[in-house]
Image (cartoon, rainbow, N blue to C red; front, side, top):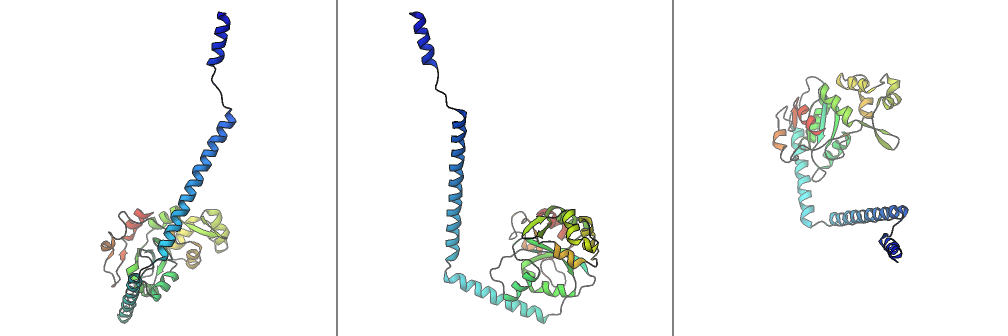
Length: 251
């Protein structure tokens, strides 16, 4: 009798088990549910943001129109001044620090010409007499200066991208040779040399590089705008050779 009772207790003490496959399936199901909930929440927030952006009070349109009018008047005044003089052509870098609100049509067109279509974008340019005149048009919306070798190398290696078909890809030696090999430019170092020396294929190299997407400085541009006003040929926003320190913080 005692042996039978001990056997019954052993049978009762055995815990129910769940197959491992079933546990894995439940775990995966829970992950899928959480993923769907997050996706739905993201879509709801995105839809709410779009609806909010569609609604604008009349005061908003009045404010934008006044800003555009002031910008047009600023450009007209700048066109009457003596144009700045470029002593020596050098490699420059321009960073856009302003959105689209309040820009005149002419300023918008110049920014598109410079390929600065978005906030916190940077491009290399050859600073010539014609380029200085363009910078005069958009000077309240950009920070620019002269790029040195360390700045060029830093941007190219950390943020350098190019368009391959319909995709934007980080540049490497294989892509450089494929795209620019016919010009004798076979690697990233050749691109850096062409930029620094303003070589004969500078235009092709600039077209090969997509605008650089950089990070805003600590505290944002609003707290740094006063530091950008460095007088040089009556162009606000020019940091001359000091632009390298700013780029180093934004890459």
